[in-house]
Image (cartoon, rainbow, N blue to C red; front, side, top):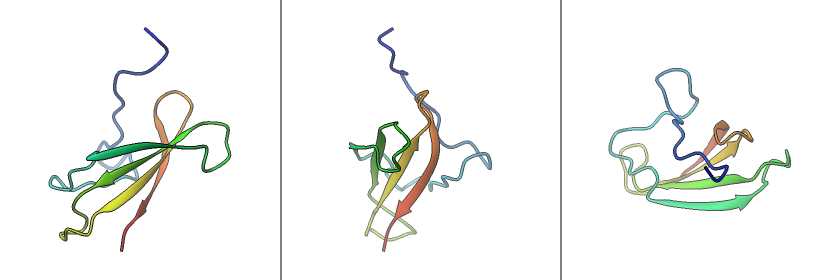
Length: 78
């Protein structure tokens, strides 16, 4: 393998701080945004088309843990 994880489960019931509705279209867009929290690990921005029952959408900033997983996240929405 090339050092990258094929996939990572980022939400699992109550164990994750990331709560997603089934119809949010989470992952409709994804971008590498560099090391936002300055911990030496690149982070991601992930788009969701629907947020909170409206079509204003949201961006989730996923702070990587260095193993291909997500340490924490922040939701940016109106």
